[in-house]
Length: 308
Image (tube, rainbow, N blue to C red; front, top):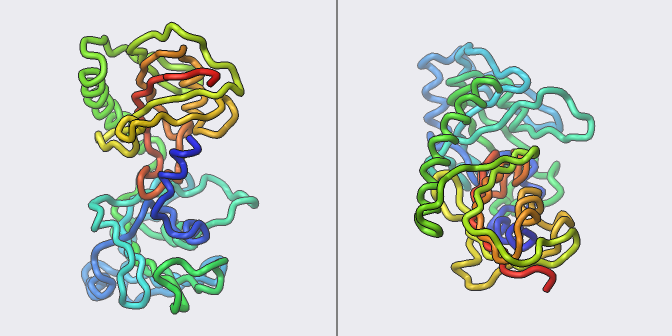
C-alpha cells in the first residue's frame, strides 16, 4: 500500500521527532504541576534527577516503590509533550493510554529513545519529566522552532509481562474481531459463514466471493478496492469511498506484507476479508495518527484487475 502508507503518514510530526515519540500522537493529561504537587501522596520525597543516554535528563517526581518493568514487559502510560508551559500533545485528549514494550535485549544497531529509557525505570503510579535537548535532534519538530528542549511528562498506569499482555490481547481481540466480522459480512455478503482460514504467516482470511479471473503472479500489476478497519470498528481508509481502486505490483514489497500475501491468493473478481496481524502490517510502531502501535488490521478487499 504505497498510497496507503502515504495517507497514513499525513499530519505526522517530522520523522526525526518520531524517534523520540514511541507513541501514536500525543501524550498525558494531568498538568505537570499537578504531578509534582501530588508527590506528597505516595511519593518517595524529593524529585530524583537522572541523566539518560544522549544527554537527556529524567526528573522522577513520584516514585512509589512499585517494581519497574523488566525487559520484554509492556508499559502503559499517559503523557504530555510540552514546549515550556505550552502543551503540544496530550494522550488524554485522545482518550487512550499509550503502550510500549521494553526491549528484551540490547541491540547495538538500534538507537534507544530517552522516553523509552525513562519508562524502563518507572513503576505503576510513578510520574516523571524527560527533557531532551533540541540540539540533539536532526531537525526541530513542529511547534519547537524557538525552543531549546522538548519536555515529556510521563505517568505509568500499568506494567504487564509479555505473557500476561498477550493473553489479555488475545481475549480482547477475539471478542472485537467476532463483532467486526459479523458487521462486515452483513454489509458486503450477508449469510456468509464466518470460518476464518489461517496461513503459516498468521494471516487470516475469509473468501466472500470466489473470483473467476486470473490469479496474479509476482510482479504483475493489480487493482484493488478496499476498506481498512481497526478492531474497534474505525474505518481508517477506503478506496470505495473515493471511488478509485489503488494499483501496485504484487509481491514487490510496495505494500504491507499482509497485502502482498493476501491479495496474491485471490483471483480477479474475488471479494474477501483479510485479518492482518501487526507483524504483517505496521508492527509495533504503527502508522500514527491513523493506525496505533501493534494494531490488527481488517480489510474488505475486491481484486478488480490483474495485469492491467
